[in-house]
Image 1: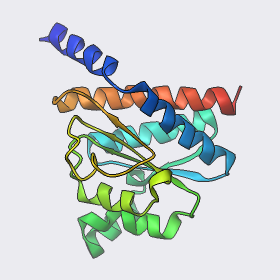
Image 2 (image 1 turned 180 degrees about the vertical axis):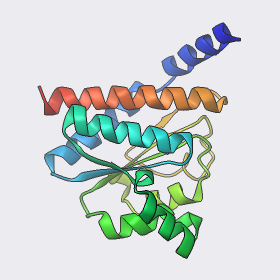
Image 3 (image 1 turned 120 degrees about the vertical axis):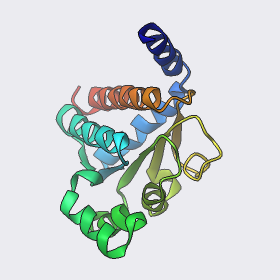
Length: 178
């Protein structure tokens, strides 16, 4: 069981499109150059990844990055008052600027609140990290870059998303911090 899990994780990581990862890093580097913010959204394990990624971008790469899920009181207020699908969009409507960027993380690709947040950003200002399904609303959305994890096991998708975020943060840090 453990060996299979590790083998499957390695195979999934090897199967990601590294050119899409590089495009994600490029968009975030552009945010840094423009003094723009990077907003990151996700639910459940993806919310945890969003917080971790925002922290790494701030600490390692000196990028203004925020996990919207970590803004708990505001997110809960919008969710309670305007509906679950609006919980991220409500916050972003107040906080985002035209040059800001979005990273949408969703293993299943069907989270209404993540999709609604992504729809607020122009194609060139959003990237998507998702699972193996290209026919989901998020997986089929036009974006500057989309990283698919080629495995159906959500645990492995989440592991690889964290790996991808670490790669992106490192690539951006090489350019912003020398």
